[in-house]
Image 1 (cartoon, one colour):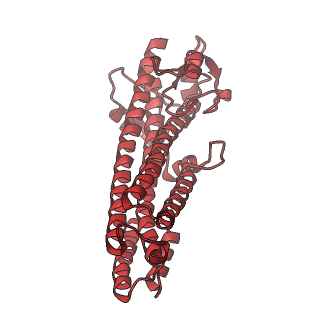
Image 2: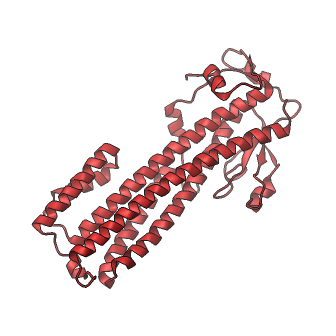
Image 3: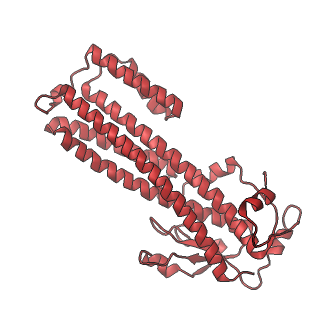
Length: 345
């Protein structure tokens, strides 16, 4: 049996790899926000240049209907939005709104700008959902298999395990876990609706108050930043949660009976993680957010298996499908182990 230091080193490496993946995903999402914000700002600037007098647009002017020529141009844009939505599977509710807008004969200037703005946000949050969905699936799968691999290699003893199919994975990641009773997909759509409403309200207020485009863009930029920061917290927290769930499932697959909290100890470590570091709990008490990470936003704490002198991994192997065990050399690579011992479900 390997010593505690062995498990700490291996599982700290898994936690660091997960954090690296999450950080990379957030960088991608930041680019989505930058692109959406730039396009929204360009649309507002163009709108002002087209309809403003002395750099101001009154509510009366904003509510004027698009002329026949302007309506035709707007429909061209909407048809491009519809084409993009069909190619990238945007949500059907928004696609229906676009189709309705394209068929209408009377649309105000302000309403047209709101539709253009909303489309950029629909694209932004659709991309954000895809990125986080891919991330949490990757985090769960990789952490699950790597956890089993590290434990088997630590004991130099392994056996075949069943692969996790896509249906099981979808059920795992779609299950709500936070106190709000929502899964990450529902939370993202809720944030999207909130930001759309805020930006639409800002566009209306800028016409009522006579704000310059620079003032409106500054206010919208602030709201976009808040939404982007929320996205960053979501990326890190969701990935940490599913990493924790995957370890719980892997420990149960191995019949691990106890686990230990392992915090990353440095100047940024929270008081709660510092206080829990080294605590040992029975697996029946494993509950992410309570007795297992993540304990807070941006949590870097992980868990490691805890073994006493009576633990015998061979007993678990004997209860497998055929009871066959294999010698796992200490220099075996994960890819080789996965190829040999992870079998289709």
